[in-house]
Length: 410
Ligand SMILES: Cc1cc2nc3c(=O)[nH]c(=O)nc-3n(C[C@H](O)[C@H](O)[C@H](O)COP(=O)(O)OP(=O)(O)OC[C@H]3O[C@@H](n4cnc5c(N)ncnc54)[C@H](O)[C@@H]3O)c2cc1C
Figure 1 (cartoon, rainbow, N blue to C red):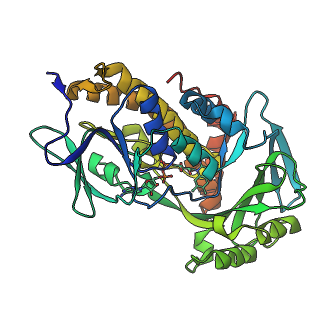
Figure 2 (tube, rainbow, N blue to C red; figure 1 turned 30 degrees about the horizontal axis):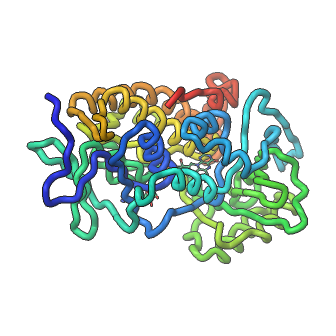
Figure 3 (cartoon, helix red, strand yellow; figure 1 turned 90 degrees about the horizontal axis):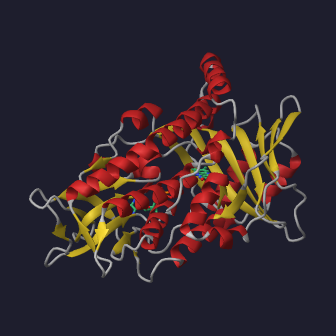
């Protein structure tokens, strides 16, 4: 039976509530806004837009999603086009260059991406300083409510969890906590006052000495370079520092054997952009069988499918999720002239079923490929590494196939 959507008396409420204003939450709010949904609110626990991780590689599939969200062209101006990628094996000096023949790859400052998404939203869409501690469902109306840590409750008709890898909404939906690779990453930006000498290539250097197993480097423009260092936690042994200067010093100690320009790049890093992150993932088989919604509550982005960063796809997958979810909700839920929703629970669930169906195999492939890369980089067993390499060679022969995916029109 259809019911008109109104907020519960005495409690703050919105038709659609999103938890988390990261890439996934902002993209979802924007996608819903572009589809004409008027009462969308994002609840974010930080006091301002949070930007962790310095920069983000976006490939063709991500640019298609950004174009659907209407922010692709303004972001293209912020970062140069990559011509290809290069893998370098430090041990034997071997290197392999390959080119994105028909693709687009750029590395954006995260700040630019987050600001472009946020600035395209109506003012005050994001409510800051709102930490969700749990989700409750009213058994009579079957409407969900966020419980915030100041004891406030926020009622919703549709609730979308974009609260990252440690998601409270995923817990409510019934997903297990994410797992951890024995790997972590340090990320930062380095500024070269007189221009840097690096070609527009996404370079990955693999080492076999020290604790750093992989160093990545991508120019953002002719003066700014994004870099990351993947670290073996099993070898590292002690707690990594939080202080940026100490993160820098600890990272410099770990890059034994890498070329001198890697050390110079890390020396030059802007301390404000430095971060240290444990790498987390959901097992591919959880993605295969996972139930990603419960009533009118669903999850998106890392909350749904956190994956190792080895393909540079977690953020783009969240952008794709946002387009697909908003499209399905708009198809199923009618809107009255005032832009308010006329909806019923059955239609919401149908929209979520379609969303999960459309996303499952796409996410499954990305999760499997990144899981195998994580095993290759992180496992201490040569046999396990060998098996993972064989599977990658046979199942994921085209290394860039995942960038050809098109999430379709909003
Ligand atoms: C080392 C590394 C490199 C990566 N490189 C790339 C790359 O090159 N390309 C790419 O596409 N992806 C990359 N990724 C993945 C990408 O960063 C993530 O997939 C993406 O940020 C996920 O966005 P999200 O919005 O789902 O989650 P998040 O970015 O984690 O955002 C979650 C938001 O929810 C908020 N929040 C959390 N809990 C609560 C709560 N209880 N209440 C209220 N708010 C809450 C947080 O403060 C945050 O703002 C990388 C990841 C790592 C770790």
